[in-house]
Image (cartoon, each protein chain N blue to C red):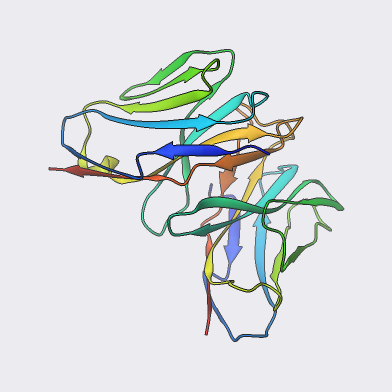
Length: 113
Length: 116
């Protein structure tokens, strides 16, 4: 089955700096890669996603890049703010008809004011 | 998403007891899922259902059971066979099969289960 590795497990940045979180996946058939943000005690919420036929996608301060050949994808947050502090999860679709997501173990991002 | 309701939010269970977590969605989504979250472990799939009266095991199904008798409901039973049930349980749904942009997974608020 699919295996998703996520790094780093914790990341601390100063407000205004950029943050990058990286994930690798094992199943070359995976073709959908969402990112979720989870604040303490709350549900994960989708922040951005990308399909395998796209190399990069941007939404304001957040961007995701995908390298299908190398089987890795990354989340980039620019101009970080304290409210960006949360746990971020990457995921990859798996199964022949993309019926489920396999998640990375998460990255705790702390933005220091 | 606000259309997925999980109850109870907090639940305490004695060892050896079964407990059922409720999940209801009013989004008219076909697919529903149960994930378990432990610190440092990310989210792991317990069971999923792509259509009424059908469900499949996920990666950690042992000690759990589900039913999908109605489109809007997907209850999860944590049985006494589950060795370490204390965790945060997340129910989720997606509009249709075939996850992609615009057809992704949305989560409920979660249920905290503690075995005492």
